[in-house]
Every structure is written in C-alpha cells, then in structure tokens.
Length: 192
Image (cartoon, rainbow, N blue to C red; front, side, top):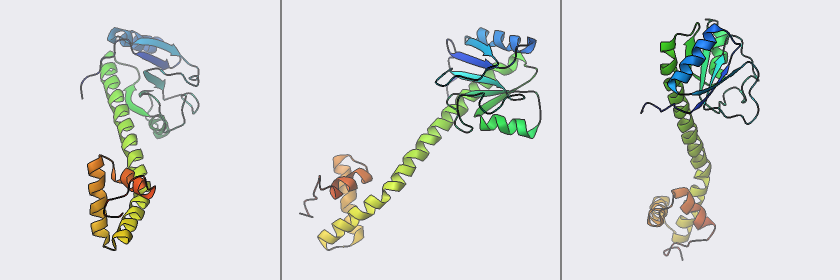
C-alpha cells in the first residue's frame, strides 16, 4: 500500500469543541486536510473523505449510516476503555483509534490506517458480493450442464468441459455462458 496523499481531502470532526480538538484540527490542517468540526449529526448524503468521531459520547444516528455500513473511513476519538464504547466505534466502521487527549504524532498514522482499513473493507465486500452472485448462479451452470449432457446423450463431466470451452472461446464467465445456452442465444455446434 502506498501512503495516501491527504492534501485537499475533507475531514469531518464530530466532537464537542475543546482545546484538544482544536489541536487535532490544527494537525489535520498541517497534513493538508480541509476540516469541519461540529457536534451535530451528519446530514443524509453528506460525504466527507474521512470522519473523526467522539466515540466516548457518540450515539447511533450521529453518523449518516447504519451500524456496520460505514460509507467513508472512520477514526474513533476515544478516551475511555469501556468495552461498550469500543464496540460502538467498531460498529460505526472505525478503522483506527486516536486516544484522547490527542497527541499530534498519533493523527497521521491513524489517518493512514483508517483509509487502508476502509479500502480493504470495500474490496472484501465486493469480493463477497461477486462470490455470492456466482454461488447464486451455480444452479444455472448445473442446468446448462444437464441440458448439454441430455442433448449429447453423454456424461456431465464431458458436458461441463464443453461448457467451459464454450465460455473460454467467447471470453465469458461460466455463468454467462450457461445463461446464454439456456436462453438459446448460443447453441453449441455439437448440441445442434
């Protein structure tokens, strides 16, 4: 992973104003971020590049997403060791924690970690969705293999190889090739 360029990105700090948060804001600006600080819930559709949130006093509804569905990288600002507060931060999608009172040296590493964790989460969700779709489409592949085997009056192994070769020649996924055969968009020459 390359260290991200943070210059010009927008950071939203959801925390009551105090001197430690003022130091945090200064550090974020030194790093190159544009900073907005407030203690009101995010608005629907609001899309900062990163959110830093008071995990000690935060509540469900403070962020613009449901627990477990963070739409942007999140850093929890945490002064408590209470398990419930840590769990709340994790539920909100926190990819890093900055302990309060905030030390300037903790800010940049937390930004990098939160961005990386968020990117990894997005990639994992995309992979899971793609695998789920392929799993859902496995029934189509099975039906196409059965149709080829029946038309060829042959075995399922040979029918599967024929479907796989058909997909490779046309640069389709196995599932796309199976759907095309079942929809009769393509008839394998041997099937007639």
